[in-house]
Image (cartoon, rainbow, N blue to C red; front, side, top):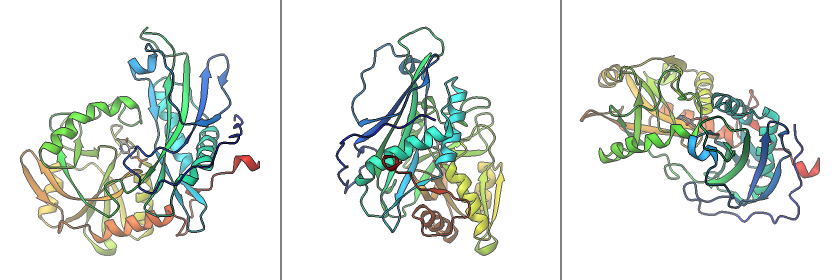
Length: 362
Ligand SMILES: *Cc1c(COP(=O)(O)O)cnc(C)c1O
């Protein structure tokens, strides 16, 4: 594990009172470089600043770029808690491996995240709806247009202050099943967080918006029958109601991103007495079960979206409403269970909330 350099006399960050959507960057970044001969360099903390890159930088042309997204919240006592950074570190290793990039040890990844939180926690207000969204990224830095893997890489960690993803309240969204485009296909890269997965989704998002929906619902690429996930979110359905409700999510078939939030919700569902279920579910069956009153709620989840209710589905020109069209009780209970854990307000038997180490005092 590499040592983390001192931040020097960097001034503490100013509080961001009104976070935008991904543009209220905090003031620092962490950088490391990798080469075959030297391995990973020591981590440096610097002000967040523009990069100087050669126009022929390999990662820019061939997409050898992997990233993560995780959040830190302020606890009631003012201390910071980072949500499941070790799980994000392990997923980052899988993403990098899939793109033939060097791996970063889990400890180095978490130390870099801690270091940035330590430097920039002053940007976060006391508003519990706000959080620091941390964005680690690794990219290929060789100057070469040969179609080959790079021999040098850079790892950066930056962050922005996040408000509520879809606004600060619990607003619900409508989804549009895409029959035109696919997000992922078997043995591709749908199960890792790599940059190339996202640009191809923008046209589908346009199509969804043109149909009056906020989000794309991705179906499996082979048959276009089974639910997979949403833009940067996994999807959950609630079957039945009350204590015996099933909390259902599409099974991980290799074309879905295994969300850390998805995993948290499956555990919390069981803790609240529900039955967590991972199954392959078709759009037609979902619709039939909604119309029969069996499926009562639906929601999307992810680091950015937290838990966001889904109230309407548009599929090939027809549409249906989920339950009453209002956020359901199981959805809201899971949402509060999760946000309580984020803020250190609930028992945390799995040790998911991590306290960043203050590196200056070590
Ligand atoms: C990041 C992401 C998610 C959510 O993962 P979390 O770990 O919960 O943030 C879901 N789907 C896709 C495609 C993603 O990129």
